[in-house]
Image 1 (cartoon, helix red, strand yellow):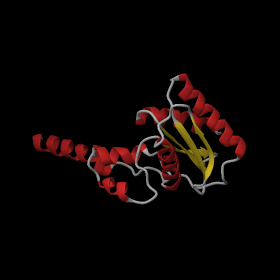
Image 2: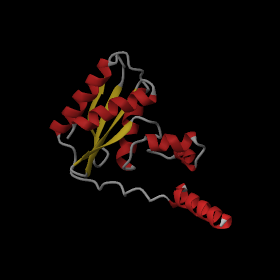
Image 3: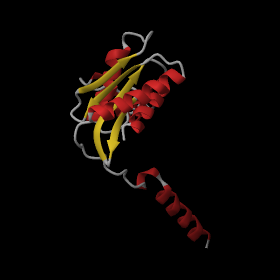
Length: 162
């Protein structure tokens, strides 16, 4: 009887193991490019979030092909944030995921460390795809403050584009 209980406990641990977890759903497909009006809505919401918190940031919005659709740089934003914000937006769009996923892999010592040397990839938190009706229409990238704060501004913008 004891062996049966131990066997059941071992089996249950395997089922609960991350090795047997369900695979995440595939990322959404690309849709039409973000419209000018949707980009303005996203930019307005992102700027409002940054201003509310007094965060000087650069905000970049790209369309579904990864081309710049809108850009804003607040006063006193560090100069490097311009290229970083664009890079985060392009990365989130081209990899169809928020750039935080990439940062987590790096922080855990994962294989994503190689992404630091891949042209066109900015593996820093603060890039978020803009998804409308289940399709990626672009992405928003933010840079200028702590990466989790950049992500907060980006998420506010992405949510407003709908």
